[in-house]
Image (cartoon, rainbow, N blue to C red; front, side, top):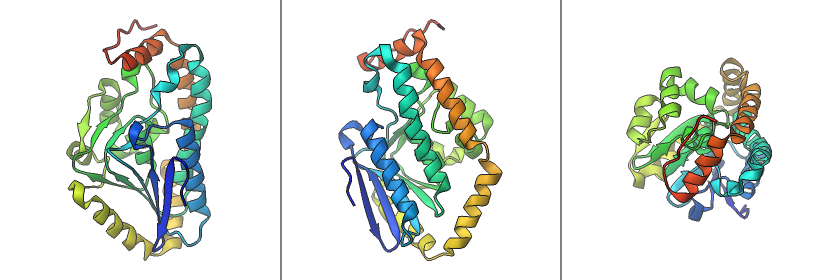
Length: 261
């Protein structure tokens, strides 16, 4: 099934959701978020689907939020307030999915794209992929469950370092940190993802569902509260002069001059 901004295809009990706005590096526009959420819901409700793969088209997995939405700095907080509601539902949908979800990380990944990948059960990454957290460089804070999901994967200290210093890192570093499970040459990404997905599709699906539910209970019991805390914090950060400067500098392709206000 094809949406306007997402492709959904199912074969051999494997559903593949492909973010399909390559011209904008699959940034999370309102339309893309709505399509992605609906695709996730359809996969959850489809008894024939045993495994879900989330990936991107073109040169990106997902570059994060759509900064162009904030050209008008007068309504940043309102846009963040509404936009993050859908992002949070996407993350909850992935975690509540009663079947394994694989992130096939094919290209550039940043911001909330990192959160989406972190919410998945497994992450298989092409060797050329570059990651950038991005939030603090524009005066904002992590969202999409980042502050819970990423520290669980890579540890509190490394997560703090990545978000505060915001240094880009590559696929091999992501593997070293424990953020991704497997790194493969670009040309082998689809092959490796399909092999893992096929193995899972042939596995004990009820066992997987129970195990994932137990992991959620043990590791992510506070996820919904954390998502709401992040949304509240993002709204506060979005009201600052620093965030306005961050957005302006990003759009003007220059370094921001933050004042701590």
